[in-house]
Image (tube, rainbow, N blue to C red; front, side, top):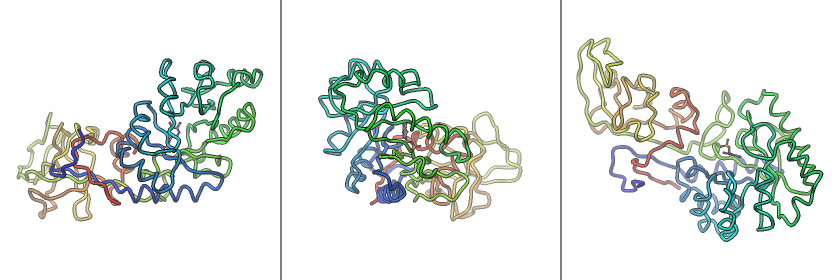
Length: 357
Ligand SMILES: *Cc1c(COP(=O)(O)O)cnc(C)c1O
């Protein structure tokens, strides 16, 4: 139930031109091979049905999703491109993958045996995440018994970084070495390594196919450094009412915020049912006219309250920016105690969505 009408009091603008520019910029960084588009979780909440065709038109020919259902929805939108499922094939779904030309990411000896010679697949090796992928014992088995891969068409061997956004973490170099060693168990198979932040770690993380997601959508792949990506998302909400309250009056559920002075409170058209985190209660800010407006009281299901005492121009119908170039998704995430990935993937279905570019 995505609201495309554009009539509601909160508008989510998604700049597809910026997504494509970000993809091209990452491609220019990755000299060793192409760059895929990771469009799992509905392209991190932004709409895979819009994002993937835009990337395809820009030249992207490799797509990753997490679920088979996401791959089925994507398959015909990117004709001829690789569509791979990171979570792999649940037992019994292999025929659907094969019939629709969808590539499973295989991460265990069992998954390899179930898939067999049905068609192209990607092999995942675990170098530290310890959730999916062949573990060191299984890699040793493949090395000792290459017949286990007989007849398989392996497009890539891949692994996933644990701490790529922390360039100083020694785990990165350890994983690069472990990946290089594991790849020798499948000689000649192309490699896929870096996610968004991995693309900024240096040559040891280059491969035949990079797999960025977050950076395409404007999340900073280099936390603590200036964001090299173009912003993609703008989220605006409209003020429904403005009321005057007296010193000592409380605002919102459980009266968690009390006015220290006579105040003006603006009630805006967004709440946690829209994915606006309740953890922003009395912590977040919106932007009005280039200045930060404090969020006060609890975020409720459909409404959020702001202290606009110092913003006399704010009235019913005024627009407040929730995510914008001067309130980037990473700043919202930090205030909410989470990361930009969670903020984007929780963006709700009630926003009027506008696609630019
Ligand atoms: C989500 C995911 C990616 C993309 O990661 P970003 O940090 O968003 O760039 C790449 N590879 C795997 C295995 C993933 O699960």
